[in-house]
Image 1: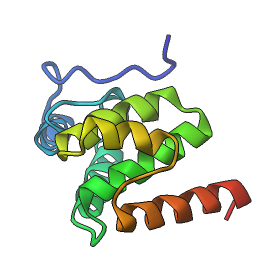
Image 2: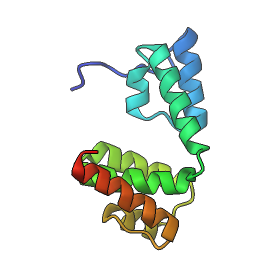
Image 3: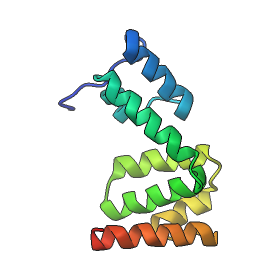
Length: 126
């Protein structure tokens, strides 16, 4: 049972409702982590901005999600692994590439280089 309860999108008002709507537009749904962050609309606004900016980065959403999957697997975070696998699928990453990312691999050289760097940073703690 969570210590901080997620905000129900249907019951939200004001800034929380606005940010939850922005989250749904960004992801197609509202992940629990974002609904929980809606307890502080400013926090959710920051998270929405951060994820929107990352989606527009030169790496792009496909590579970014493969990195996130590899890091989530390395960290043993089932919630993050599940969320980033779903988001990666929304970005058009194939099921095979989503599965390969879990073991730190990609058939795309650009993605492989980024995943390898990210995992090296995780392993060496920076």
